[in-house]
Amino acid sequence: MGSRALEYAAVTERVALGVARLEGSGDAARAYSLATETFREELSRMPVAGRVALLREQHVDERGRARSLRSEDGPGVLRTGDVVGSGEVRVDLAVEPVEGLSLLVKGQQGAISAVAAAPEGTMLRMPDMYMSKLIVGPRARGHIDIDAPAAENVEAIAAALGRKASEITVVVLDRDRHRDLIEEIRRTGARIHMRPEGDLTPSIAVGLRDSDVHAVIGIGGAPEGVLAAAVVKCLGGEIQARMWPVNRAQVQRLREFGLGDPERKLTTDDLIRGQDVVFAATGLTSGETLEGVRYFRGGGRTHTVVMSTRPRMIRFIDTIHALEPDAGLQGFQR
Image 1 (cartoon, one colour):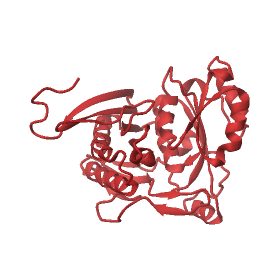
Image 2 (cartoon, one colour):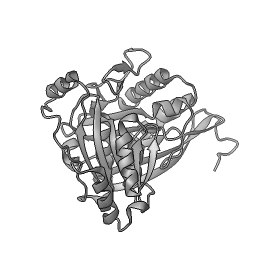
Image 3 (cartoon, one colour):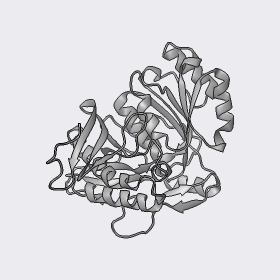
Image 4 (tube, helix red, strand yellow):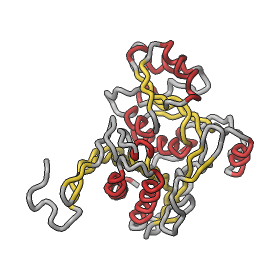
């Protein structure tokens, strides 16, 4: 898998170069459709046979009501279950066309495009719904328990890092469903970064040494949980999770996917089996880990992170792209 890492990075870069032009556009459906179309086009050039195991295709509210993220359902749009690529090596793909879709179209920070790949059959398939997550970096691995109160986990993370609870920062999505969770964390003295959208981006930061983010706690999208597991596999952290159905229909959907016990605790190895995984993400708008796309006359500049387990590596890539034939003839920006 790792030998293809830079090719996956090139995919997210091409997606970002197209979609970031819609920053501040207010058109979420157009941005999502363009991202999935570009992902399909770019993944089709990969020398693999990639099955799209997980893909965010709809927005589900806290009552379980779903609406499509697409502006249209044409033949070029990527869908869950699609097989793309021109090779014979079979892989599972988890695709995040745009994490932070509303952030992008409002011109706010923290939107990315991401993809993870692992050998076929190793990614846990699940419906597009909510998932409760607890994510930490390498030093806190083995010290957490999603079944324990949040305050106990905060204290355990702080102890593992050799800090006081008041010296760590926890990321929580700013949602009504997290009111009690936020109050519980506050009572420990820990700092809280309440994000308006997206828990995958801070999951990357959690795994990096000397990061200002030490844990991600709360309920977010299930597909992003598998992408976070890919990050954790590469960076050595830990994720514990549990599906979070909000109605009987979602419980039935879990059974159809072979997840008959919605209360089952899911570990990193449940979400992605084995130790062979690649993850790549490119910034759309600037955030805590990645810079957003910057355009110049005839070209653009991207900032990408790519990581793998075999070989174990993480690489940040700052790339200048000439998108028109005469771009750069007057000199590239530094």
